[in-house]
Image (cartoon, rainbow, N blue to C red; front, side, top):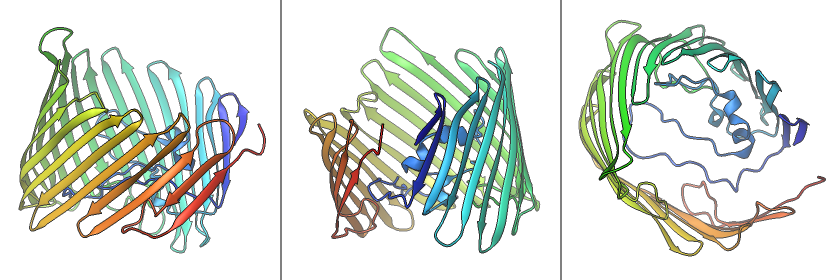
Length: 401
């Protein structure tokens, strides 16, 4: 790492080791498309916000999705402010098989209420060179806002574009938006995340949120989204409504009711869900469950997801997240994580992941987060499907200050 200026940082890496990083675990709940998962690897999380070209409501996708880059042996990035009004993010990595990936985004702020940005993302592999370019604008006048996105893709199998338009109204409690989007079926983004392509259509949303300082109730929120998308080839693609109602009490109980009635890719979804959480804002004593039942993808389905988080003793925390799905057969998932904070820099803990017939257990100890040398000891593999009988030690030290 090198600090070019107080607000501009350069980072480089050779043969990076991410074996000590816990990866995000995907839920077993049914989905029509691939799910977005966060990338927890430090090389990508550091300055990661500078690569985000997002819309405030109903974002259509991610132009740079770093999880597409599985491994690499060399990488570099620069991120931060070039000037008070210009922000830069640029990175490039090279994999052992000769593949390289790059992404660069520049954001210019015109005023406190208006900015524009552009991003270029590319990858080169045995299949050829793929490049995606995007430009977006964001502005608002008082309670009214306007956002646009325009993108195009080139490379093997690509050649299409994506367009997005959103106008919204937002005051203290009420937010409404009307949006139009169109994404070509040959909008191919090897380093991006676009679960829906080959459609054009509109959607509308309304959300009302209010908070109270006194009384039994702390907050109330009611939201609804209407979607009408048509396939580029003609016919239905994605249409229907999704709504939610949530209440929080002064005693820190969260209650939420969700309703879905839509059609995706020619199959129906009609579900009713309920979520109840005790200790909604207290991670040291929190437990609850989400229940959803109805028809998903044309098949009757019931999904139950219990959660719990406790501080058992000073510095000792235990969390649990589970999932049980009955959809043409029973599937289950259980994740138990424990961490004992011995001191501000020393921790001992581990994780157990049960995913149907597979179970993975690992234990760790580390001394990190302070000044000086850091140590990591791991028994097992944090991201294996099943328990691995292995031990690894990692030492991190600074070459200079």
